[in-house]
Image (cartoon, rainbow, N blue to C red; front, top):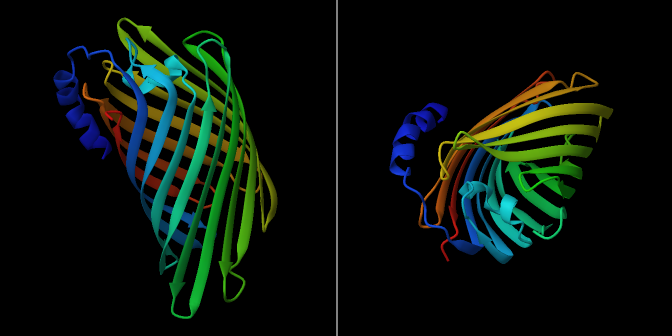
Length: 293
């Protein structure tokens, strides 16, 4: 998918090179399709997910002269969001299905440099094979505080808690784990020689508590997007994690985004994680976004 995205990029840039018409929007509806495979201890978990997320902006968001993908970074509109998705799970050759539910609130105001964000996501999957059954429950809770140094640059401090629980009806297959993390972040979007560039950095200190005890980890991540024009961007990200108990890992991601003048957006992204512990992960995601209602 990476090579397909790069191949069609010049065509998209030419097609979308004309200036867009400034407008505002208050609603955003996103549909997504995601496929992932990851290792959990000695087992392999493959998941296919599809769902929808709705965001309601409490004040109109204008696209003005900045990149369309960065509209609310500049507009700073308070918003609420909710989403639901469905999972098809293959856990160590056992099959099943489940659901995902997510809710969130983001408090940003143009008149104040301070903002905050709350979010919660939960998923539950039931898988089975013969007389063996397992229930996989995962959740994520986040809280972020933001401070805008300028209209183009902001800092952030956040807390993240992730939980996972696997309950099986046989043997010693049941396990649970929790991750608590403190996140320092920065984001800046600037224009250079007529082209916009977004750069984001994160420093994450986390502690994993699972059946093997506590594991402390530190992650440094850098992600960026180059906007060929206001509508089309190519992004990439790198992250390196070091920690106790053979928990070092590296993440690489790439994505392509393009918007239309009529309020639609198409996004394709891939991510790969390589871990010394063998907990590798590969993710492919496609999204279609509508602001046109």
